[in-house]
Length: 192
Image 1 (spheres, rainbow, N blue to C red):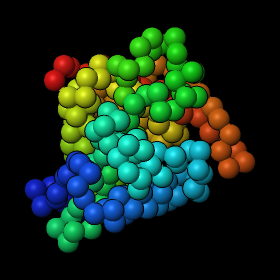
Image 2 (image 1 turned 120 degrees about the vertical axis):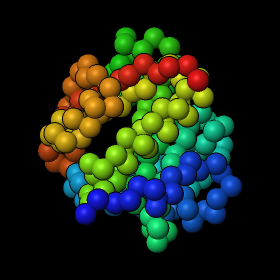
Image 3 (image 1 turned 90 degrees about the vertical axis):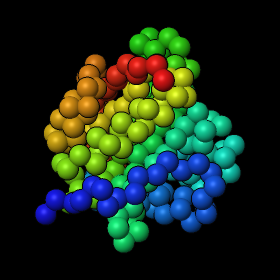
Image 4 (image 1 turned 30 degrees about the vertical axis):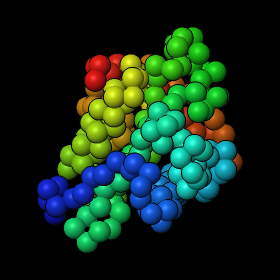
């Protein structure tokens, strides 16, 4: 049954929220990662999520660090979706790997942690989250939005293509005793 999107609360965190909100967002993301990708917590891969529960100066998603994180609650005040963006340079390995493509890292943000409960997918909520993040990225003076997605997640890849992200490469990496492949996407952002 489709969800009434008008009954949902989509909110960008601004630092004034109780710490429990940030802890819940971190736990929600880790749950989605475990359930969707069968990947357990890894302090290197999930440093951005660990930063969510830290003070603003250490939080990758704080406005002070040119980041943003949004949460979505249903009518019963349950956390049902998230999305974030942070400075591209926060992931040095990615920045190094794509150094030739992005000459000025200060102009590039990375969209991350766009997760929705499975029953909510395909109803337009993800598109709303991405539009909010892109608007915020433009306000933070980013010119390009970068992301990567699992190469085997066909529905996810189609979603990003529908959001006008273009694929420009693929890369593989070891993950939990196997080799995973991800797809690189980016999109120019209009000025705010």
